[in-house]
Image (cartoon, rainbow, N blue to C red; front, side, top):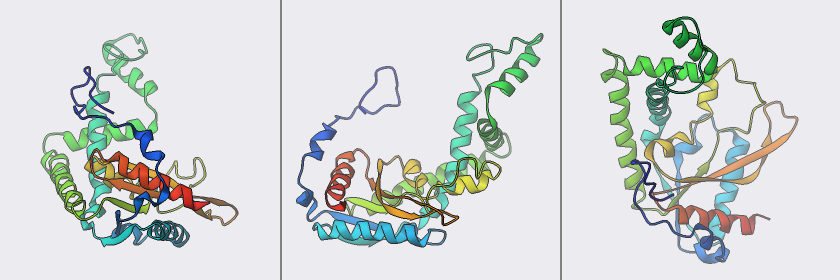
Length: 255
């Protein structure tokens, strides 16, 4: 948080004492407007996950928060935007790791072979996948159709969030549509893995702070074990104090 003189992308914004918001009484959120985006409770969200999150939101209401149903229809495109913008940035940023200027080197016999071996050994399957997707999105003939279009939709998503935050102080929704899956369970199905991000990437795309607070338990996909459910709280830019305050208030009454 705050300005870093070695990083031109960091904003010069005053940083509050975040922990000071955790000393407040739970009832201090009385009158706070909590938006509940209906699109975050749609198709694909596990019923037990939805029930836990809605119970958590009702506890906020019991503390005096005012619930407001809101709509973020463009959020359905955030996942597609993210998986064009993110791989494009990965492709661009990781290009420097060629075994000559940055990173480890395979020290192969020829320059071309050194490039190939270094990048082949240095990157795992997921970085390679994102580099390939990003290189395609940024390539001549595809840039306008993919990266440029994604950037335009991203702007629309930001505008939509800004409009909603004129009506509410924070948004409350599930963190994930399902509980956690087993380690490696989706390793061979990257599309399914990407879909697990569907409720968190809208905040990433819009550059918004968000917080996940445990809010209950739900059955795993095989029904054998109960796993934690997350309540996601989102605020407008530089309003971390609001989500920390609401998250803390909820933890005081959750038990």
